[in-house]
Image (tube, rainbow, N blue to C red; front, side):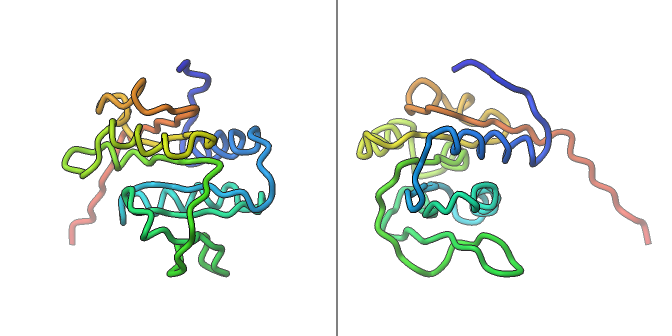
Length: 163
C-alpha cells in the first residue's frame, strides 16, 4: 500500500474515510460493519459514523469479532452517533477493522482477522489504527486491507494547575 496523504487532527481521519466510502458507490441501506474493542474503539467508530451519516448507510458495531453482539449505530438527537441495544444481522459491503484488535493481549490475531474477512469476499476491508499499530503488529500484508488510516497522537501535553 502506498502513502497518499499526510493529514492532521480529527478531520485528517474523518475526511479521507468519508471520501473512501463515497468512492465505493454504495447504495442507501448498504451495511458498514466496524469490528473493534469495547470502550476504546467505540468512540472512534462513532466519529467515523458521524462522518458518513449523510450517506444513509446501515452502520453496525461488533465487539471484537463476536457478531452475536452486533449493534446498530444510530443517530441519537443532541448526542451523536451511538451503538444501540438493537441486535442486527450482518451483511457488510464494507468491513472496518479497528486497530484496538491488533493491540497486545487482545484475543485476536492477524490470521484470525484475515480468515474472518474471508467470510465476506465481496466486502471491502478498511482499517483505522493509531501509532502504526497494524504495521507494528505485522497485520499489513496479512489482513486484506483495501484502505487504511494510521493516525498519530503526538505530542500529548498534560497541564496541571497547582492548588
